[in-house]
Length: 115
Length: 114
Image (cartoon, rainbow over the protein chains, first blue to last red):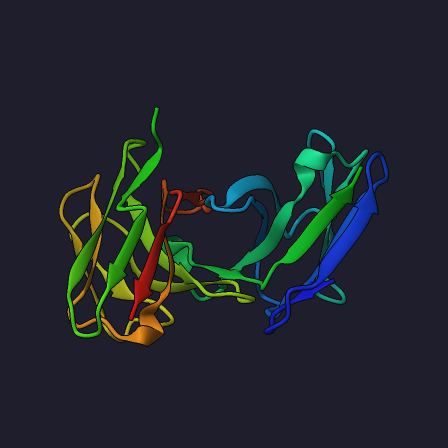
């Protein structure tokens, strides 16, 4: 899974399987979290977000789970497709950033979907 | 609707040269940001502008300057480029304020400093 650090973990899954990408965040006071997808040569693209007053949020084929007790965030992708192959970043809103909304990004996880 | 537009997409500089990266957004967003992305690392904030007329340092501001030219445009300047500034640079914008944390990113500028 992903954490703040220097390595880029890789998750390899078969097409059609479900994917789970994990992220450990650092600030217990953070109240907003977001997942981005970055394809090669492109900028990060918003996937889904969640606030700390929720444990789970669902989108189209994606679900984000938040466990505040252990400061853990996960992104679940259902029926993974080749087009899902990308680097996935989690980010937390810096609790001291107030209205400036500064995001602290993790190092990313490379999702490789095998046909 | 173009979103966030960055120019140039690629640039090669020699050590000591200067250049300005341009960024414009057409979403009427208040806040704009410059990030750099290095291999195996997440995005690191260089500078941001919470609103027109204000700029503040982020995590890695040394060697950079910014200008919030107007609400749409936020430029990043390297006065004397160094090899350590070889990176991919992303501009982003957000509506700003409470409840508007989502950032929208441009497609990036790949900069090499030789």
